[in-house]
Figure 1 (cartoon, rainbow, N blue to C red):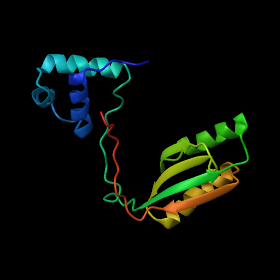
Figure 2 (figure 1 turned 30 degrees about the vertical axis):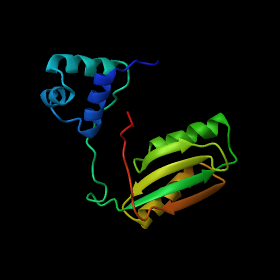
Figure 3 (figure 1 turned 45 degrees about the vertical axis):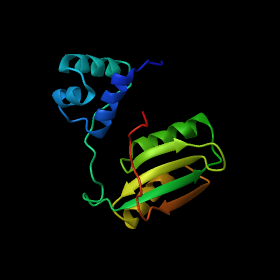
Length: 153
């Protein structure tokens, strides 16, 4: 479903992407509107599915999750039962922050956040004990250069 957004909607979304915890008064002032119309627009965008869950963004390294791995997975299995088991295994593991099915030589890429290499190995061993994969390549991120969930509105 496509929803038409006007300039004020975009300004509100930009503000929410920067800090969703700011008050309605602050958002209204920054977008040049008043509180009630801003609240109504936000409510409509939530109902339309444009705005999802509003969560706190935590600092992984400050919490001891120092290792970020990008895991490339190739599989020779493509049956529905295997896919269901694989998706369940990913959803059951909080270490998996993102999972994408890809076009090309690699079937899946995962973003896995763990405390260290030993924790990654435990994750890897658990995953391959549940689902058969043809090849797994783990790439350790040496430095996060940019990370954002903000869309270019």
